[in-house]
Length: 205
Length: 329
Image 1 (spheres, rainbow over the protein chains, first blue to last red):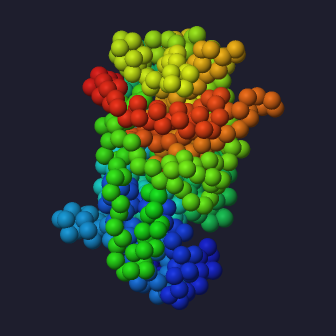
Image 2 (image 1 turned 30 degrees about the vertical axis):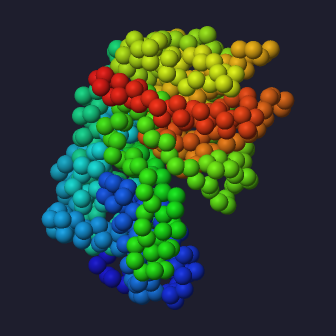
Image 3 (image 1 turned 90 degrees about the vertical axis):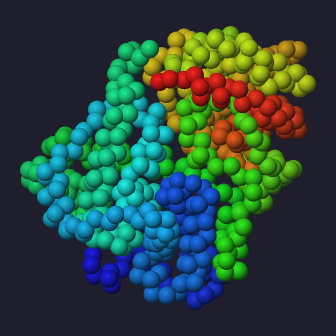
């Protein structure tokens, strides 16, 4: 992963375009929806999200046709810009994320072996009732965990692509994903306990 | 391979991130090991849930155009005023479970292109061969068929904590403040929390009035929400009109393409079955709630009705307030 020359089959067909707006439209603007959705979840606010999106595409347009696009592929590239914009704003606001040191895959595996995953009795859970809780649980994750979860679930990126967006090693992505998942499971589990969702339906009021 | 050995690959396997050889080894293990299979299932279920819950964000109409403009001019385009933010009403999420009201009417705009066949300010006629539209009509018909039991002040299904509060106020809040559609020949008949779903009533749960526990609809793809039923009294055969409220606009998005953008009202007109009467459906978002109006009326009548419903809903935030203050899980 630390090999910066890595290219991916799905993006191999992305040519380095000239500055034509038509091509920008075709290559970049078609990812607007997913960029916006992730921006909303990062920022927690639709107005800020729109600002982030505009800034992202402005920067993307300025850099359009440069090496980065070929290196990353359009969607990871845009999401990387989005993250840069978002974190630089947060940083200006004094809320820089605390990035962990990189971990290798082996470190991640070792960590895994030491930490059993709590398994919830999901079949008894009314997960449909937990939309809001899940949203707030994700929102309450530390920024680097939240980003990984969003890029993983919403962005549909590979571990490699997430690592590129986040500027960290793949083992770190896996570790963060694992920790984020543990936190979400714990949080939702406690919501479930609080609300008695684990009880049988006939035990409800 | 043992669980310990395989475990470090499980999540990567679940995400389709490992090579073919390792993939085969994990698969071999999973065939024999239910515990590890469960881990994989959980991981994938979490991803799907996050995707569904957090991915349902409506992209503002006009954003694409503003981004184009920004790109062309080299500076951010100005966002129009008047668009409210749903994320700020998180505390209303609970209240929204019964929200049948709105406080602000969205500005009307006309959608251009796409499935539009014709348009008047605010209204957009869309194609009627839509799964969601059919489902809503069948929901409407089911509630009409069981209309007597639909009028149940216990307000069954999914909201046991709230039902008592609301039912106590049924006559002075719901009954009185349901939008007045007598001008259109429809009188208010009943309210329920049966929501917009595909398969209620079939097993009698809709009629039991008890609010039994498993009335949520993960398996049907339906959504929770309130349902006001109106009847045309002077008709020779029963003619009814439904106004559904759906707690959050992104819930409605799950139903399919008939859903509305925030600043337009989508209409579809079609004939359910072979020779059924013409049905018209209107879908729109109003404040933190989505609404569906459905009934045996033609398109011009539906437009008139929806216009009145929107005004009425905009006039009484009382239900939301009541719910927000009263509901304790």
